[in-house]
Each structure stands twice: as C-alpha cells, then as structure tokens.
Amino acid sequence: MKCTLASAALAALLSQPAVAFVAPAASRATSATAHFSATLEDTEVAGDAKELERQRLKQALLGRLGGGKAEAAFDPVLVDPLTKDPLTLTAKAGVILGGSTGSSGTRLTLRSAEDSDRVFEGRTNSYINLLEPASDTSEADEEKTSVSKSPVLSSLQTLIPPPLRSIIANATNSDVEYIPMRDLFTSPSVSFAYERGWRQGFAAAGFPGADKEFELAQEYFAPVGKSVLVDMSCATGLFTRRFAKSNVYDRVIACDYSDSMLTEARRRIRADSEIASSSTKLDLVRCDVAKIPMKTDSIDAFHAGAAMHCWPEIEKSLAEIHRVLTPGGRYFATTFLGTYFNGVASAERATNGGADLEQNLQAFQYFPSVDYLRDLLLDAGFEKDKVDIEVVGASCVIIRCEK
Image (cartoon, rainbow, N blue to C red; front, side, top):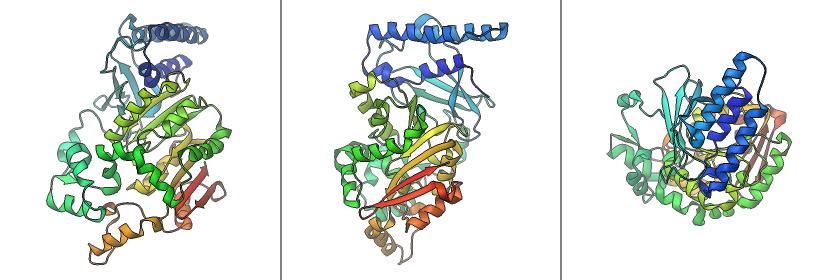
C-alpha cells in the first residue's frame, strides 16, 4: 500500500529523534511547526476524500506539536519483522520539538495493520524495539531465554575465553541460551569499549579505519542519490553519525540486536551537535538481521560495517538484505576472512575433542575464502556480475553488491 504524501510527512516527523533531542530550543519548535505546515499545504489535492485525509493528518501533526491528541500513520518503511505487515505509528500527545517531553522522551507505539495483538514500542530518546512485540505470549513457550536479556550475565560472559563462553553458558544454565557471535555485543562493557580501542584494533586485519571506510561506502552509494539508508549492526553509531551528518540521505535507519549498543549509540548521537542541524531523519531500531523489519524493495543503500562475521544465520540475513533493497539498490559491507580468527577456531576445536563446534556455538563466522563469500551472496539472490569482493591487508574483506 502506498502512503500519501501527507502520510509520508507525518512519518518523517515521527522519525527524527536526533534533531528533536540533541539541542532543544523553543525557536526550533517554531521553525519546525512552520516547516511541516508548509509541507501539508504543498500536499493538498482535489477531491473530498483526499481533503478529509489531509485534514486528518493535519490534526495529527498539530497533536505531535502539542495541539491535541496524535493520530496514527503508516511508517513508509518499517513493518512487522515476522509477518511483514505494515505498522501504524502513534505517539503520546505532547510537544517533541522544544524539549518539553523531558528526559524520558515520547513513547511510540507501532501496531500491526493485520494483527492488532502484535504491538511494538519505543521512545524517541532511545530506540524502536522491533526485535519482539511488547507482549509476546509465545515467549512463554521458549525453553531458553537469550542471554541478551540479562546485562549482568552478558557482561560476565565477556570475561570467559571465547571458546568456552557458549559451552559454559549452555551447559550450566538450562534457562539461558548464549550464542557468542550474537550475544557478545549485548554486553554493556563491550559497548563501552567499542569506540575506545576495540574498533581501532581492526587495523591489524587491514581495515582502513572508520573515516576511509565511510568514504568508500559513500562513493559506492553515490549513484542512489537522496534515499533511505540502513546501517545494520550499527553498534555505537560509528558510521550512523557520519551518514546522518553527510546530509546525503533523506532517512537513516540504524539497526542493532544489542540494547546496550543502541543505548550507547543514542548517547553519542545526542552529544554530537552537528547531527542537530542535519536534514536527515534518523531512527534507531532494535532488530534481528535475519528478520529485517522493513518492506520489500524499500531500501536504497544498505551498510554493514565489520558485521557479517557476527550474524548467526548468515544465509537468512543476506537473503533479507537482498529482499529489502530496491532494484538498483546497493549493499556495502566489511568483514573478516576466517584466517583472522585461526587462533580462536583452534581453541574451540581443542575444547571439543578436535572437532569444529556447531556454527551457533562458534565465536564468529569463519569465512574461508572470497569464493565462499561470493557463493553466499549469489545464493541470497545477487547476480554474479553485480558482486565485487576485495581483500585489503591480511584479512579485511570489502563487499559491494547491487540488486
């Protein structure tokens, strides 16, 4: 279902938490009100039905600016991660452009258009949680709970050598499931360390560094022009902030599985004064890359920096990326060749009688070669002549794909 221009205007307003909260000012509220009033005037169309819709959306916008109760609109990109049904987006009435909502932000509710029992929540000063519904009764049937739901346990796991983490967690606690390549990054200690030395250490594998990697991604995404960009496995927002400040994209959606990474990303976004003046709409979304909560053919540029080796369901994840890309949309990613993790893989085998661990128990994905990676991308739906894989330094892989 296509949104009207007016619906898009409302969705745009609801998707800019960075601008709303980095540097609150009464003057910004005034200018924002004028801007969106102008947007609505530009979208007037003939016909009674369309005029009624325009008036409804105008009232909804006024509600978001403090003039009344907010109404619902469909998000132009986000969907239910399981059913892929559209989501209606509503927010608690109140002023969001002037800082009067306080430190708690504005509560957002996203409800499946086809199943009213599937409700997702978020806040404008943190992130939208599309990993799981707010009240998911199916969780009661699960045999194990993810370690990501326990920050304390997650942090303690980082003190255990990688080859032993999953074995100890899964063998000693029947109520907790630990998947290393997913749950390591749910630890608050890892989120704290990520831009304080952790990410910089990737230079040993040949990673060019954040600034150069961003430049390479921008060059590859240039043909898509003004667009919607996804920064998957965004971690602390190292690249998210750069994409948002570039003013190249209409909307940036930064995604991660980890609550602690998204919390640190939001903190850094709010501390970056340049983002406040950016024209880019910025959202943070918690989700699983194997179940991307976005419409088919909706994303023009998809970025995943140093991430693929941390995706447990790599085949499903790449297929999902191909699905959400628009025809001509581009995927830019960096990751490691498996040789970089030889020491970790050897230690894992030593703890397992010399045999390889099951993939979901491994610390990382160990991509053995460029050909192996290319086959994964072809199986996901990308065409051979639109896949380019480059190895930089000892083990850094740069991937460029076009749908």
